Length: 292
Image 1 (cartoon, rainbow, N blue to C red):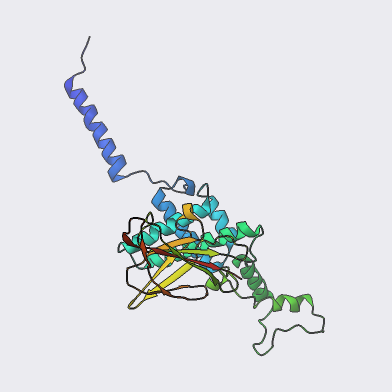
Image 2 (image 1 turned 135 degrees about the vertical axis):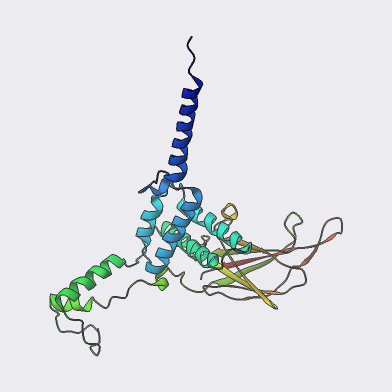
């Protein structure tokens, strides 16, 4: 059997090495126009954050749903809630201060999707494309109405041109277009929990709508003498979409309120409890808020 000369084998190895260096380091292949479903997990998180930021600015929920569908998540609401929790943990570990705002936007989008699923009907949010089209058409054909002419309903029949002109001042969707939760929440329950199996000083908060469905993405503010923190419902879906908790420090009095408007729970402090053996431990408090 004839052997390959060593100089030929060496040349092949050198050529192979140079080819790998060129293709991996000098001129690696660039992938463009990839589908969102093929993205890496951290890039999918960035994609969801961008969708949530766009929804916060436009209030266009159908477009946000269409974009989320491209990620191929089995449950978009669960994926958004899980990402919001990761972002809040990252913020607590000293990440950028913008993380909290982005987490709020992600949680708000999850809440909007949950509300739409519960209602069974799409939310009446205006689309930015329709507003732009109306503005473009009326700018090209008709002058804008004078500022001193009030837009009111009159008994005088309007021509199609006048109706088109009146549609121009339709307000653009802004951050306030995020669906509101209606009337302020009422504090309907405050229980003392003495369970040695739970963490000491556990404050549990449950938020319900008027149909007693749990609501995710509700921001809760807890304050005490010299401090304040925020946390959200829905970050522990295994305990319920409307569930949130906080560990209280012994001998500290807290005030708890929902950011979107609610009764204020005053004088919240970890109670002193005893086990069956007579040992003392810090119990917990459970607060229940519900829309009237």
